[in-house]
Image (cartoon, protein in one colour):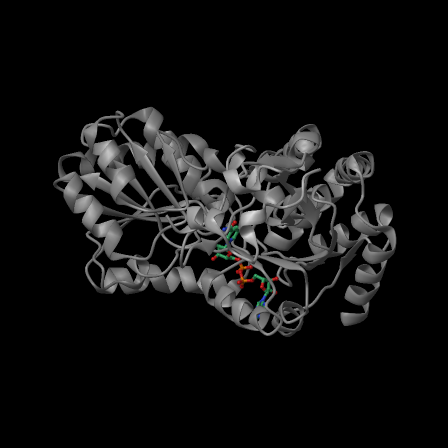
Length: 459
Ligand code: NAD
């Protein structure tokens, strides 16, 4: 691993900063390769998950990756431009500007849930910023990791882009390498270890983590459109989405309506319930068992379980296909209200006032995303002003991630730093401040012997 890093760093020092044309060429090469491999990648993902429709992969991963490459390529000239900065009166003899310089070699660690998008988008950002990159994909998607490794080896030299495969041990070694920047996408627990490992060499970090993202539905706003969006966010990839609404907060008078609309919408989306072709399976037996025990634990403590999508009696259930469920009568003692669910289970808590909602959200760790369904009134404003989350979606779920020009990242336990938008380019660039002395020598008042003029500085 360290050899690859040393080779990439030597090549970076040898070749210098790539210009606009070279960076665009890298992005174009990546775009062509991703499109050429799209069918193979979608098939590999489906094998790794047990089932995931190629349409879901196209919509949730491929289009996002291509869109992000195109966005970066279009904006690159502007992003790379040095920025003039203000100089104060004493320094007017010169000028100041910021140059965005590539950092060097970027480490990228990816999770299994969107193995294509969460590899390609960080890589495109690293290349746009003029860097080289080493990628560590997840061991839980071995077929996809192999395919992505071939895809990248087809279009980049190993001293430009390299893939390192392996499990937790390889991840631990990878996160301890002296990269010029490390972008980690994964769980909060592993993020903590990665931050510790990176501290050894003081490697700058972007941490894209998880958490419990709430969906708040204002009183009277349980309707077909809002619940369709909730079901879409919760059940895409069977809930294995970092920004999926983890649980819902609904006004107590709307609970029955929510249960009935949620279950009927799930039936519309997935007519054969968990045996529907468009319904994704759970990545591993360990995660399947984890979800089962979350439901059993909640049930033991008095929660009501409502299975929202039911398979026809004749259907043969696929391995690791977990039925969509609603949990009502939940409380904070239950594990399902403490840990990130990352599956198709939606616990529903009721509230009386927006103050209750704000208090409940603020009592927990800051979430990656917050969703609000309702009118943009004083309650909505209060929710936005008085809670802190990575991003916010109003009257939709997930869509903030698809906006290339918006930053994407959590805060505190849900992450650190951001990418997408200009924020991604800047995270992977060094903002170098440069002051250029003009024709005139630097002001007399700054140096000894200090005279009357220096009095000005202490007035
Ligand atoms: P994970 O933390 O288990 O694994 C992520 C990566 O870390 C993998 O490549 C893995 O091999 C590696 N790894 C495992 N143990 C390690 C260790 N001890 N040291 C260093 N590296 C190690 O996460 P996951 O289960 O693959 O993904 C699910 C999590 O990722 C969820 O919490 C989800 O919310 C989060 N996620 C966040 C985003 C985001 O953009 N914020 C996107 C997708 C997923």
